[in-house]
Length: 638
Image (cartoon, rainbow, N blue to C red; front, side, top):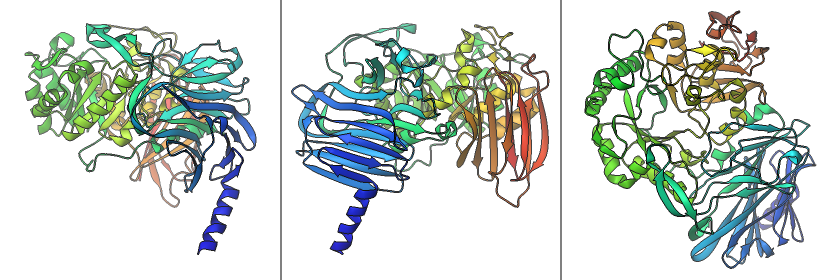
């Protein structure tokens, strides 16, 4: 047996990890990706795909008050692990700290783990990503530590990006040979979120320093705004794991659409019984200013009363929507227990329960945190099923703690959480699955104010932001406009750029376990066929397949729930034709496909669409034309 184990270890090292003095080579399970790791004067790594280097030597380390972990260090112990999903190498340094490296078929990741006494101050961290200078980039640039709702800037080459330019993560780099590298992070606890910044020929990690003075400010004067910071990024326990630093790697844009490496690396669920957590779709009044044209009751933001919200409840129930999302105005922004007397929220929630509709309530993060237990107990006493927690607007260490604090306390009361005005997810929704969505995306709300939310952006975020986790884009607009006819509208009934079928496709393509129907119930009521799709499409799926994809240009995805399949396709401002291959369906079975496609005049009238039903099987190939800013949606059932 001992001889067998020795032979196994030798074979493992030959196939997965190769050691030499201060140098280690780690390979992915399929052998396509390799990482060369070097220790000694500087700890660092490089990554190659099929023996072609795509990330050059990149130093890493943790700068504490009295030492830099990773510098001038030789491991006194190494260990390896091999699974079907990844191969792992761990370098241990004098039992004080270790660094874990992993290679998946989908990418590379590493993290520091320390075993130090007492607490430590992390002055800074070295996380380098030596991207080749000829790589193009798609970056959400930012000049502060509060923005995850910006637009994306495309650069033709890394070498052309100005020094000091900062971007949020995930950040995408595209090589001329179609290889994509996406920089991201996972398992973020009690530590600030990572940005990247151009420095010399590299991108380096950057983090907000710990706040030393905050004031209430920004919109509504109820957002915690940092005025001064300490000269360190984190003060934390000495015995802990640090976040994973990730380089997602793909050779085909389709691979990015189904990459869940961030979630894979996250801490497993801490909620033992999650049966009460139910993803779903919600009616929502804020985007369309609570206007109900043609309804028999007064509507609008000034008429948000019990009768109006009961109308939304009845609409949700009639169309198999699981939830009503009640936005700002049901209570005082500074005191949740001061309920708006015009809106008897208890009566609304009681009516919703009688219709099997759950109610989410909006609140400001700082107001909620004033007395978290008291406020959550109050929300629970009202009978709400969840909260939309808004205006965190930071991701320094203090703010990151709020996410876990709120999620954990809410879970104890069986309350779900939809974070808004927040930083991007890093897998916390796996650890606390009562987190049903995050914003952290420039979503449909900006259609009220500017021109930035358009099909060009819609075809970037599935390949960038969506790799971090789910996002609450809030689709569903029923006033659909071409590039030439769109204008921002606020206040009033806003429109959206792109066709109606483009908007429908978002419910399939986008990852959104808690999804809004953002437009007015009376707009949906005019379109029985549209509501047939929106009532049927789920928000979480059992299986997903990317059928076609090109970064920034087009995407086609098929997703299964039970025996039903849903297909969504989207294009940017260029019209195009795609062939939908139904070979993902089981063989020897006939299905009915309900198809929503852009109408022949959709390039002029973006609301025009065609609805038809056909019989399909796994040999069917369907040509579909998409208009400018267009799309399509298909509901497939036995």
